[in-house]
Length: 126
Image: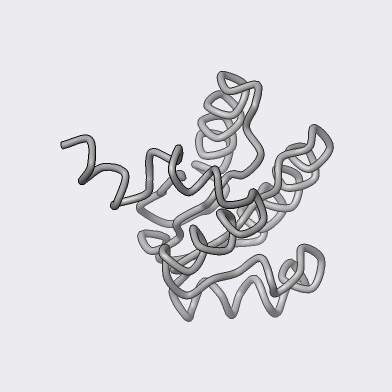
């Protein structure tokens, strides 16, 4: 799960993409990247283009990208640009727990217990 705070525009899109690709390359068994968009205030055309390229690149290596908690104004930009139609509206979730539940369901029950983001797992280890 990766969270970005600020506007996703021409001046910082490469930083955002580099961080996601860097982290995903460090995890060879990675199957999902969840982008938490709660901190993204605005997205311009270059931000949308970067997201499109990033999704294509990650999906090309078998990593599915899920989006969660995007603010209405950022979501509307992605909707108007056609990005949401390209990646599928089913890849967008209103809340983090809904996105995680979706991923756990797709991965199967054994991943619920092993996922570091599962609060029940964290409580049992604590």
